[in-house]
Length: 230
Image 1 (cartoon, rainbow, N blue to C red):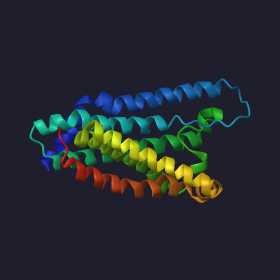
Image 2: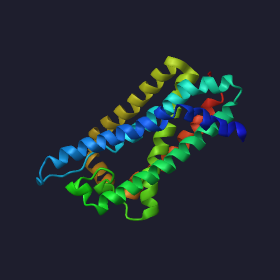
Image 3: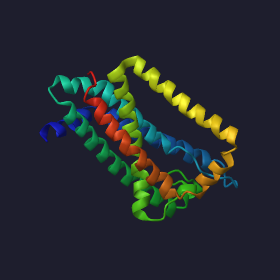
């Protein structure tokens, strides 16, 4: 257990890149959007932005960096692959919970202040809004875990199989997505796909489906790291 807890401590030595930059970029994005929409002087426009995505993108990048930079160092210190993996799960799980709590609080403040006094929707997503407090919290937290495990899995593919592994993964992804697009166009399914997404609740799109994809990514990452080369 001590080895597992050592991993988060190693990562947070470089806390500016792990915590500082994600929140600094999110804060900058928020301030820019707030200033921009305040300058609109009450014009009747949809004042919703996608700036919140920046912190999720930074989590994705941070998880890739953990594998490419911290993994070799941790193995060199005698930390087992299992302990390193579990330490990462603990670290990013804790970050997801804390970050989700802060984003939830900011969304509540945003709603209470009428969008920071200018009608700005930054921390809440109107078409995916979830009324249940627990589901709303999970709606912030689960996407963190999904992108975190996705970043870990991609980085581990590189560590395990190198450039050829990344090229194979990229090719397979392109074939699957491209094939799906061609098939949907050929069969005329786009309208049905759009209706399916429209029928999904915010809880399903932010919690249910991301959680469903997170689990296999977590399992795959654990299996790959057991044979990954530092």
